[in-house]
Every structure is written in C-alpha cells, then in structure tokens.
Length: 82
Image 1 (cartoon, helix red, strand yellow):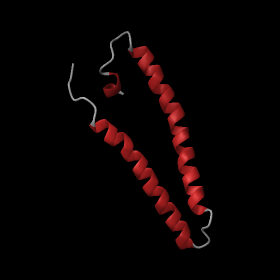
Image 2: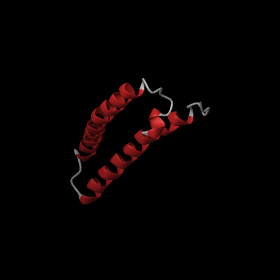
Image 3: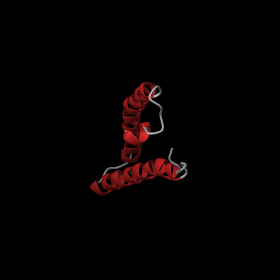
Image 4: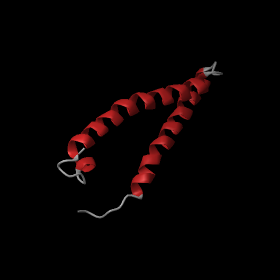
C-alpha cells in the first residue's frame, strides 16, 4: 500500500485509500468467481481421477496466465521518482 500511495499528495490520500479498498473488495470475489467458472468448465466432462487432475492443472495455468498480465503491465510503469 505504501507504493500505491507514494505518488499521491496528502489531500489525495483519502480518496486513493477508498479507491484501493473498493478495488480489493470487488476484485477478490470477482477473481475467485472467474477461477471457479474456469474450473467448472474443465470439470464438466471429467469422470476419472486423471481427468480431474487435468482440470485442476488447466485451471492452474489459467490463473498463472491471468496473474502475468499485471506483472507485464507493471513493467511499463515509469521508473522515475518524485
């Protein structure tokens, strides 16, 4: 959170804190829902333990790929400090 608020002025900090909290409270359940839908999609035809393991493996790679998006975007952030 310190890095998120580092570039905000003292007057902007309360609004930034509220926005950060809202994004966390909405984003976490949304992410869990997306992962549950992906897992359910893979589990739809899984009848054997091997197929179930494959469903979890496929879901893991989706989570890994979706987690890479913010990391790639963070790479393009400016590196200058105020």
